[in-house]
Image 1: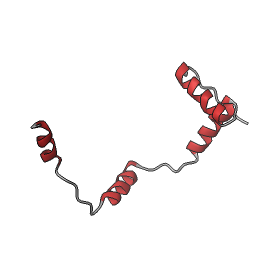
Image 2: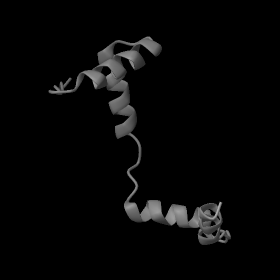
Image 3: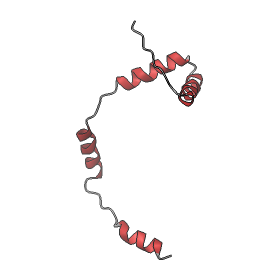
Image 4: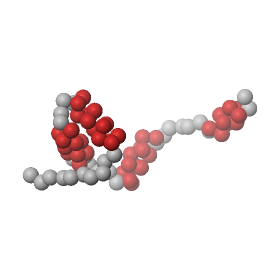
Amino acid sequence: MPQLLIRNLDEITISNLKGLAKRHNRSLQGEVKRILEEYSSQPMDTPLAIAERWQGYFAGRAFSDSVELIREDRER
């Protein structure tokens, strides 16, 4: 099986990964492997697909004008 070497990770990142590994009862290598496999198996959305999804989510909703709220807050 191919191997991967990642150099120059900062200590905070290593510490965080070790904490995750401990919480999931895995080795550091096992936890990093799981993260990479999980992330790489997710479908990659294009920016246009993401924007269209958000537009669909907010379609038909009415939003208040924040200018009046800001003005009221400043006058306090």
